[in-house]
Image 1: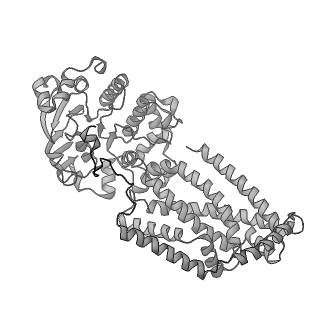
Image 2: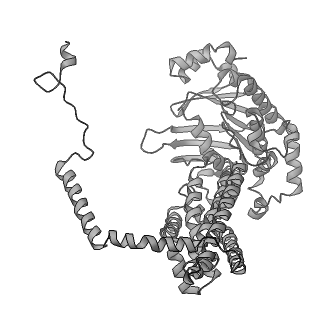
Image 3: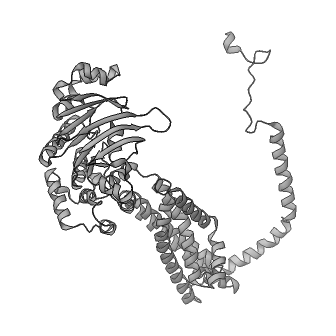
Length: 260
Length: 274
């Protein structure tokens, strides 16, 4: 399904962010990737759908090396990879429906998209997704009128609209308050199950990772230092993942209001 | 007194301070000043700035002003009316055609979405369009396509392209990149990314600039008429040619009223878009 081999990525002349990363997943469940800032979590996800271009290595996705793709072939691969962003990245001035339908842009000709002439089945699907995430009443609302949690639901619907065979989520709850963050995690976990999707999710919050993930991958300095089931993740492992003492303390003894 | 506080250069114990000069090098400083004075004196002499001529000019100016009062709206009323109608038509056509034309050039001239050769081309065309004042453009187009409104329309299209193209390109360069990434990651093609991720972000700016440009073009349409590019400027020019200062002042008064009106409408409309 997805296999990453010896992935190396550096920005400019600085030390590589990813130093020969190896990872693979077959399972249609939720994999949480944890690690401190700068460990390479975001870069890893963004290499997969080629928002950044890796320096070397391979990313095999259904047998095709994503790093070799260009133009139309790359677009066709991207549309099977849904992504949810930390800052939602919705088009603020467009309606909720337009944002969800934009998940189909890889499937329809340019002019149909430009004039909003989406196929009826896409519109039906978008409406069903909006209903599923609880936003059917906001179809024609502009996205800049929504709250953070609502925006992230639209973001999730847009990603699922692509009919993805894998879902990437880059800190999807980091911009939200704890309560909303919990709701969004629940939603993503439920959708993973319902749609039978493999999901790679970057998380800052270890408690959340343990609660929702079937597998946890710990990243430090661009390589994987832990890979296992949530119950196998010990404090020693966390120490290995989080080099920074302060951040480790926070993860081991979270403030009560953060760990609801 | 504390030694550290009384420190400083002089033996009397005072700290001598002068504001550092803008140009540190004294030779350069006084040299530039001297060059300025010399050139100013030279220009003053060659251009024959002459108080006597100013004195003789004042009564002549007074005479023009007095024959311009009261303004005469009726004698050439029909000409004034058709002149303004033509100016408004020129403005309307040139603004919308110019804005439509400037959109692709603005996309080309935005470094964050255009590849380098396209960026160079787009920037180059916008710079050329901006470097020529509408009066100069008007003279060129009157020579090229003859007197009349068509020359005026072409002039203002180029003028609009330079102005709106540049500001729109800057607006594109300031958009949020995350939205581009999001649409790109759906597998959308390049043009779909432009329409979905870029266009909505610059739409308020585009509408605002169009309103502003309508207002600017209305003014400019009067000026370029003076060089033969149609509209009320033509009517004004021929009124001056006939020493018909009553008609001329009527035109100027109407122009002020129309431009004030256009300005208030355009600023009101701009406030609506966000």
